[in-house]
Amino acid sequence: MIQGIYETHIHVENLETSIDFYENVLGLEKCGYNDERRIAFFWVGKPQEYMLGLWEKPKSEIVNMHFAFRCDKDDILNKSVQFLNSRQLKPYNFLRDGTDKPMVFAWMPAIAIYFNDPDGHCLEFIAILDGKPRPELGIISYEDWTKTVQEST
Image (tube, rainbow, N blue to C red; front, side):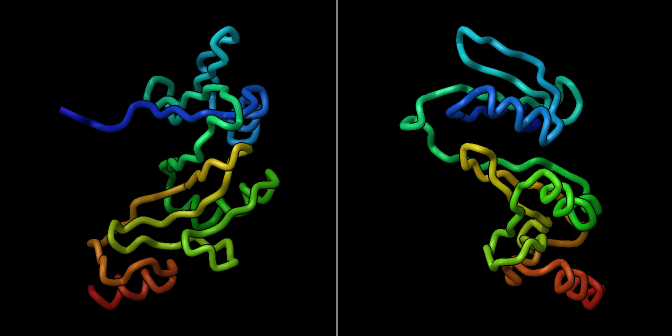
């Protein structure tokens, strides 16, 4: 019955700041806005495929959330860090090891890089990788993942 997640919602302190971030920095298409209710909606991916809702709330009511944007592996490897840096966003990996290198979650397997929105929500670019899950490897570099996959074939 369940085919995926259609929408997610987060609370933001300043709706206009967040609209600017999601529309002009990340490039999402705004598809709905209600000033009276202080909410905005964005298409993620193709219109009507997935939706993100932003609800303005006082700072005291904001709980930092996490969600991930599905991306292409090559974009994460070759474009994501430059994309984020060019928009004054600080990319980091799950290990928070001081680098901006995407890491592989071997249990999935998937490659990912993280960044934050203006309210401190933890956002992620993620892509599922070819190969079977290898949970025993933990979180590793893409280079180590590639070596492991090649050695096992």
